[in-house]
Image 1 (cartoon, one colour):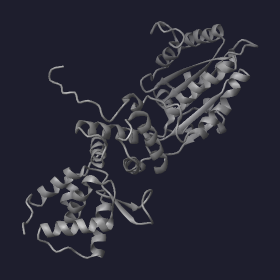
Image 2 (cartoon, rainbow, N blue to C red; image 1 turned 180 degrees about the horizontal axis):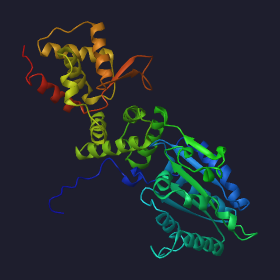
Image 3 (cartoon, rainbow, N blue to C red; image 1 turned 90 degrees about the horizontal axis):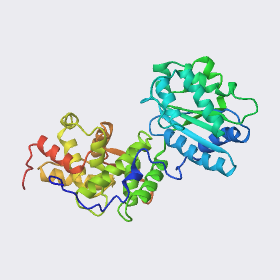
Image 4 (cartoon, rainbow, N blue to C red; image 1 turned 135 degrees about the horizontal axis):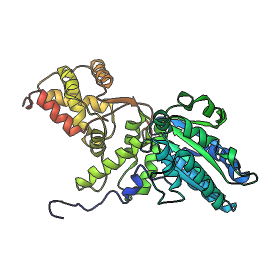
Length: 395
């Protein structure tokens, strides 16, 4: 197409595997909650019972992926038992009314169901007839259910939680609920609806640890990238950046944007600079106000680090101190001693400009390491040179 330059894709082999809506066959580090949901809902197929589960957790803890993966696996399991299970997943932020939610559920059985002309009570009755007709157990996932309750009130949720009370005696059809939200359910559910949800059926997902994020990134590298384009250091680097939030979505987004950055540069692999560029695209970068607040020696220390980190994801304090000394020499300044340099690093770390931590995988023994997580080193170097007068002193 005229006006567009399309570069051949050398890095990402399957971008769809990096999409937020993609759910891997195997969810990394989510076996335990997956099995807990199964232990509750299996009676809905075995005994025709109505069950309810709540899944809560902060952004990026895998709530939506967990519920969808469960539905897909549960449907297969029920099929092997000779039972029919269907599921309807409703995003309550986009379907925040009772009628909009019901319409999304009914579309599972009647794709052309009219979007107006029926009350909620009538739609519930139509759903009941669909379940009886198909001898089906329906799992309804209400994602961001707190938005539905806030905007539409608790009535629909209460009706769905009591759905089986009016079923035909002896029939096995039923409806189970999976409620997904960031907020704990006791903060927004009314007492009547909350009384239908057992405390043991409330699953809280913790934020991912750094090690768990590294495993998630490794899985997506294997699924979505050409072999040999992302090495272990890059996986560890992305895990370090995203570990502050424990957010798998952030980690996957960083991986994707780093891959695109590398491909745009015509590289055959993802480097640390591509990850830093991805971080800059994804959320806040180091601001000029932070750099302006630094003293000259602190800026020289940061300048040395920025130059050293062009091709490195991590560096030791010893390497950084040598780079600082070179920057001082270049600008005609005398480098300070080791203790003072360490204080500069602490200042840069407290400001969030560099990351300071202990060595991890791939390094012998325990030593302090430095990362530059927020901004590409080349951009940082240029900003520092502008602030410091652009041209270093020539010797």
